[in-house]
Length: 284
Image 1 (spheres, helix red, strand yellow):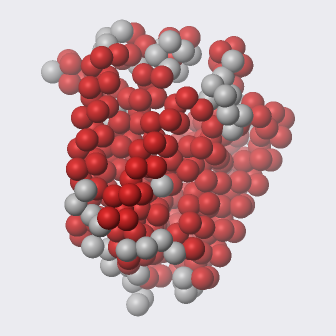
Image 2 (tube, rainbow, N blue to C red; image 1 turned 180 degrees about the vertical axis):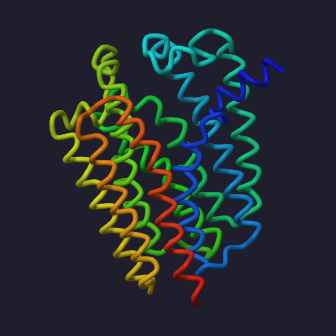
Image 3 (tube, rainbow, N blue to C red; image 1 turned 135 degrees about the vertical axis):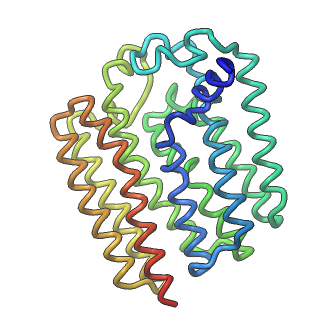
């Protein structure tokens, strides 16, 4: 039982915020592609696959950071950092999760299967980007958003322009919320010599987060207009805009716990967009 608890922690199943932030854009795409009526099979595959790949991604991330995490207060007690789980065990767990997720995708159409290959590469390679890429949050946005084109492919057999533009909106949203997260670890990242958008933006970090929220909302508005969405959807965007302002108020002082609170609160941002979309498409 203790071993299962360690695996549970390694996969971050005790901290569902990452799964939710990964799930909301996928649900946006499923609802938009299906005009509010996603296939039950696609819904099961994508919700389950999201949970599996987020868990696998956490294991891969901790494998890559197992020598850094002991030096960061927030991550020092992770199972790989403490040695409670070996690297070999973690590799086997990541492989198992990935194989099960790929088996689910294999039940979908050929385009969805093909798109799952770059999605897997993005998930596996993201943990290394903080070593050399000045803004790993942008790479994370692509990795977290690649369920969007896959969902369009599964529902319609192709990925329209609006699907790729929706992915762009997710990239900006991810940069916003993951910069808030990076602001928590800023001092540790400087000490360890790893990259983050919080370090890249420097004293302009709060402004940059605001601009990214604004860009995400503007792009989401364009996607809605092109998709024939109206008032209910725009009210969802308005609610997300209000939450963005609240988050900016939280991070303005750059206090670690307030920045972390803003990051966690982005679950409601993604939910607001989704609920507006659901309400709008339910009218049809």
